[in-house]
Length: 156
Image (cartoon, rainbow, N blue to C red; front, side, top):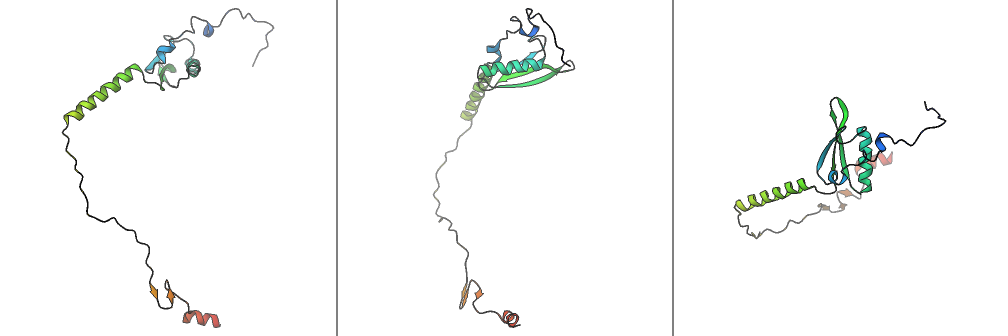
């Protein structure tokens, strides 16, 4: 339950809002590589609060981030894994370049067969519609004259 206070000394800053605690290497963390930051080493305060701070900072930089919490030492929120996903990081760029180089090397080593165009003599298939049989006095198998059974039921 909330308690109403008559006065409070707001001159002392809280632990989370001090200027020396609130400075983080945002440019480094938002470089596109995957980072794991741990509570107590890389940031102070609760990891859920740090998640909010990261998301707020990313929004300010117009960056998209992906976050996951990792359990450490029995605490389900102990560490945060984060990555900026709207740019490619330096390590990812190196990995992509080496993959492309490897693929080009493989492609140059495999023999290529010449592909020749073969002309076909077949005619294109023609779709035919349903066929209907025309019998004298009947269209599509229906007689204009009623059958004997129908005539008996009609006369009753």
